[in-house]
Image (cartoon, rainbow, N blue to C red; front, side, top):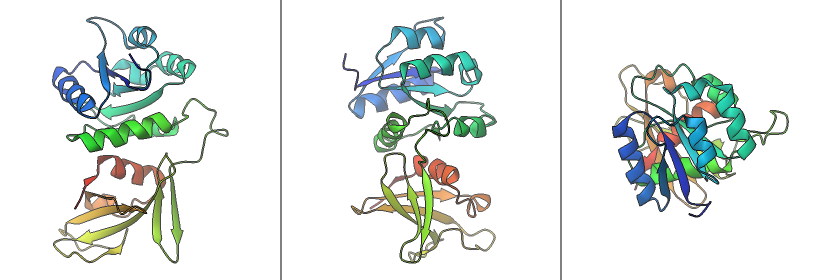
Length: 219
């Protein structure tokens, strides 16, 4: 089993595990699961080396300093998703640890991007030593630029309703208007996601990363 292909999936939701397992395989990785009644930290100890560990935020392990300490010892990439019934109350704490937090993806490209992001983190580093990515930058030429954890730069702009014209990200939007946030990198790859009215002005690096991780490829 290649250390660069093993993805440990941790959840008590069989449907989520089935979906993630399928997407992991389609993305060219090898999914591995905890044994019945096996604790997440024991699965982490058994499955090594693992490339990335994907954890359901409804598991107690998502609140366990012991689990994070053991994962830090392994220096393994982590990604945590909002499981079924999640209240999202851990999103801030997870972000402070430097770990990607995402909604359950439904396509291969989205999951592959999440796994690459998780693998590139050094969340186990002390805050002062950790790379300052992701980042949000503004310039006169490019407007808003999101820099993901791998260092790739994405121009960010919004589209309103059916209008294909670009508008600066975060500009005021009339109530009831659909807003699509678009990320475009230097190679021309384009990703987009709908944003709710309260998300339109959310342009901090952590907010943009959450939007970026749920975005899907566009033509």
